Length: 409
Image 1 (spheres, rainbow, N blue to C red):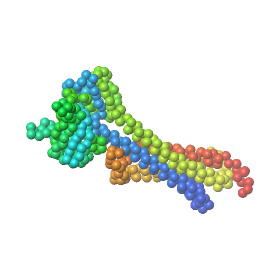
Image 2 (spheres, helix red, strand yellow; image 1 turned 90 degrees about the horizontal axis):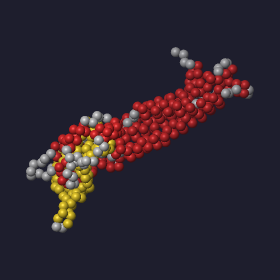
Image 3 (cartoon, rainbow, N blue to C red; image 1 turned 60 degrees about the vertical axis):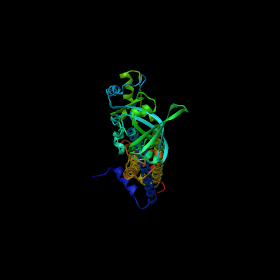
């Protein structure tokens, strides 16, 4: 198969080894620069996308997608569950009571958030049953008369307190009892019925789950404070939350997971954009190298260009020769960089190479996720930048006057 005339000349100039060794080295450096820039950009986007996705999945596995409050109070939560599950898109509903308490164990104390749940319904709105390392959610059910009520604690909290399943802990809440000595904090003896790991440090170190009845007595809450919902499409949660007051009345107030974590995901998005722009400058620097190498090539090949023009080659064909040459550098560099970035991201994610402090980043290692859209955008932008870098040198080559170029030959 015969290659186009412009491509043949471009390849010959690009691969020449004798007189243009210096220009070939600059072209090689330009190719390496494009490859490094594209690889760094793919890895950076994979890092931020993976971290954002991992945090989102862990947050949504630990908590509900939508929270609903009834301004009239929730007197019959079973009726509320039935009503809310009738909303299109809602797959699960469960009541909850929350409050703060001081928990004491054999080896230490900790301030925690106590969450009162219905064990049979909680599994429809969170991943708690699947996150149990020992014991189970069923341990929260009504205990025998000779045993204290159960509590589920996170793995990090259990390690801090030095407790295992079956051990006793003491819970102290701000709500007090009036005694002859004045108002005294309310204390309750509980039994550790299970230890869970939801994968989010905030929950594994600061949360304890009890039954609704126990929580209502601890915090003087006669009825559940709010309802939790899980939906079939997490990205449709805002629309479903907005539809609840329209369908069930204005007494229902809602808040979805995107509102509750807006600041976190906004910060992650801004960081992703900042990193992309910063590392994207590497590709632009590589494009400047392409401009330099093409300008030098045009100067070196001025006699050849003049001969081509005198033989009838159009200015458009001359321009195409140098555009194709610069584009080849960009295509090769982009292909190598994209493949290298994808491979490095896969290795780093598969083998969990980079570990980070769990209490700071909420995850134990840095995940890498290469989205097809991000991957395609990086490739298209890199090729576009490299193509734009060829315009000026190519136009200069096309404008070369053969008479001037051959005057001193």
